[in-house]
Image (tube, rainbow, N blue to C red; front, side):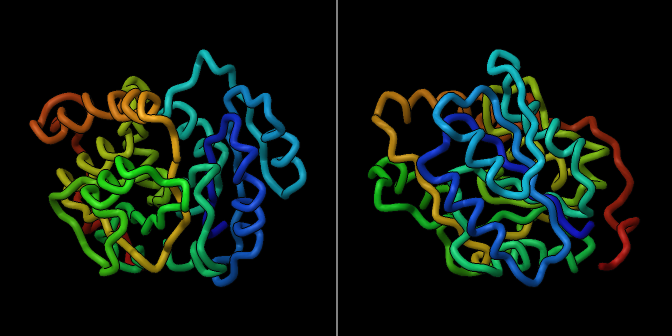
Length: 244
């Protein structure tokens, strides 16, 4: 299996159907599989998932963390590369997955983050955050220090995840913590604007602030060299990875 796409979902019926439809239209990255990890949907999300060729995993909502849900999905994956996609992140074209895994031809690339195009429902706070995080940039990058990474539209080598799974103990920003660890080990994080998705939350101010605060401790800890993603993981040099 070339690639696996893992989607975390809970009450995502609004955009989930178009996301899965766009995934099933992908070309240039065969074969690939779709794994959905649902944490207690009650709005029809499960019915939508069952209408498409997905492998569905259900977990109790009280056991959910972003890292745990993603790790559970990856454990069921068989692809050499794993793409992580939010249920409301809709690929912008039929070559999204092919473009997302293209940078892995560079053996030093541990993960790839794709571009995010805000939907019409994006709030001004979301737009500021998306611009500051760099997920709207139009030029590709190879990052050896900047750990900005996003499991809303990202991919990584499953072999490296097996060595360093996502932190299940943090409330948010498990993706940034993982990217920082990879960079500390000498790997690179690629930014690929050609792998674009339509993504934004369009949520009320209070909910937006709550979600931001979930990420804040992990983000701040990684900036300061503390907490999740800290030094101490000892892995082989990136040179052990063969060229793709």
